[in-house]
Image 1 (cartoon, helix red, strand yellow):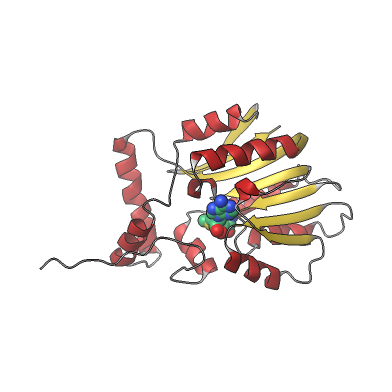
Image 2 (image 1 turned 120 degrees about the vertical axis):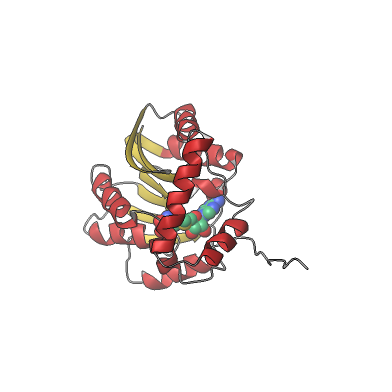
Length: 231
Ligand SMILES: C[S@@+](CC[C@H](N)C(=O)[O-])C[C@H]1O[C@@H](n2cnc3c(N)ncnc32)[C@H](O)[C@@H]1O
């Protein structure tokens, strides 16, 4: 008799380990992408309007920016995430930070206000093509002129040969971070129908179609990419 594996659909509301440990063990160069977000943001945060993080999870990135800019009296920091559980955690962690708020919503249905900056760190890959388009169009409209969007995405490689090599290397990364082969396979089964990565070329096409003229690919580790998009 063949043994059947029971599969759960991947959900950030129901993860098999704590969120922080999961992220650090699953995303290559996580500290470095936070470094770039922090430094790039300093070129765009002004003492006016709002700064958003879309898919903020338990609030680490937007929380650290809100603390850093607490002396800016007229700007605010807002984190939006689909997961009610992670938003409850974020609100608890940052309850004493007064320039920061969190909203639980599907970001593509959220009403954004005028903003300086939007950060989207490994989130679009969980949205449908239609949702991605709606979200980026909305953000582009609300960004001030010379405002920016910082996007990180796990992409599909340009052909099946490179996809094969870099999927293998990404598995090695997870094994080095002490995930077992069974955990890696279970996660990849649970992500079927949830993960909707695009190629780098298609991501850039979408960003251009939504209006961004200056798009800088400043970060790359195999399929993991970072783009700075300036309005
Ligand atoms: C890989 S995590 C990245 C979290 C965070 N940006 C970070 O780097 O710590 C992806 C996050 O996107 C959120 N997410 C997925 N689809 C979303 C949507 N349609 N609207 C808002 N958040 C979404 C998930 O709930 C999850 O917290």
